[in-house]
Image (cartoon, rainbow over all chains, first blue to last red; front, side, top):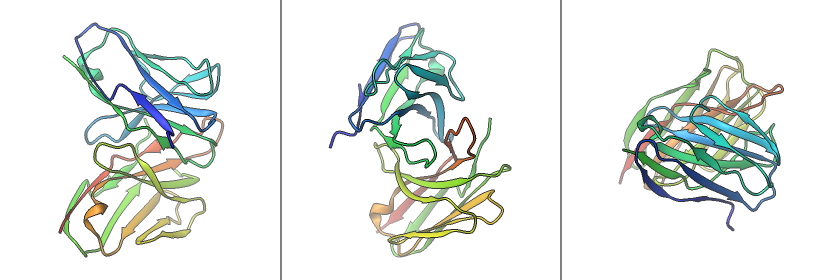
Length: 113
Length: 112
């Protein structure tokens, strides 16, 4: 019953460092998403993918990059971390684009100091 | 960008009370969904609504897709402590870039 697995769960970065948040799903879903959650702001879409080899920008892509080399994995890379990227990051997957049913991971809490 | 406005922002209620929350938008949506986020977890889908005027229940939860297609409502009857969490509405407008847009969330606290 793994579903969507995110690592790490917690991370502290210094300004200017880079890191990759890992996301893997075992449900063979084509659609995968990265959201960030800030207090009182809901969930904002960073990047999404409709299948292996295809990615596109969401609402707030600046400062992030993604890749989708396999159906299972959708890593999110932060280059030159900034305090504004302090947030909780959620990865999600979906079997369909039209139903809106997303399966979320448990989240990765990132602090940039 | 597009935003869904949820109200209230937070609610502090006693166990056993009924709860109502809503979500509004300036744009029309084809699908409305309600998610719940338990503390320290990712959101989980509660109810999905696909037709204007639709009323759907899931146990003690009932949600409605507004007739104007610009709003949705969620009611929780006879609240219990495990109802604590953040409730998010979300909408899909359809079309080529059919990405889910989330509301700002309603924080629910239930006192036993």
